[in-house]
Length: 150
Image 1 (tube, rainbow, N blue to C red):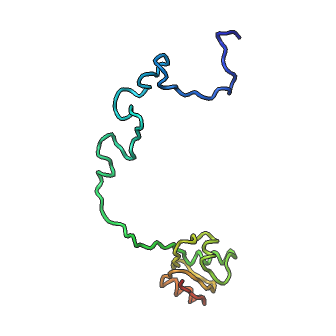
Image 2 (tube, rainbow, N blue to C red):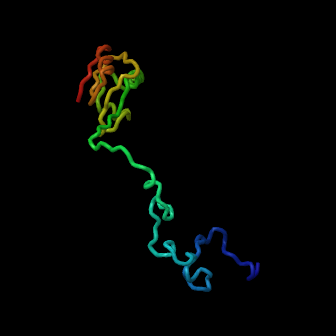
Image 3 (tube, helix red, strand yellow):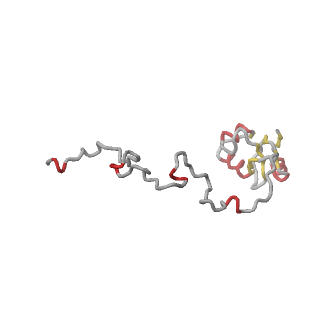
């Protein structure tokens, strides 16, 4: 080892960044590696989302149509076969309400639940929900249960 091959210990140095704008002698002075003129050379520059270099952006080229109904109600659907599966697994016994839906992650506490008619229900259940389809209500009552609307 001599003065020509001295180097710091392995892992002792961390900062490998270019030091921009610190004088001409550094090789990165003057324009600080930003080139000449243009938006990217200015301080405070940030490219807008969807910016395509001045070309008309995609979100403005594509035609718009339709509308969004602000009064729309989004229901979280729970099918009869899902309820039967909960009964088979012993997670519910005789009644199902919002607390059971939330506990079994079928809905969150702020969602509106609608019982749908897919599958068959063999268990006698008292089901409490916001909405029922006609087939779901008929199937619950055919199994000897009760459909209660909140």
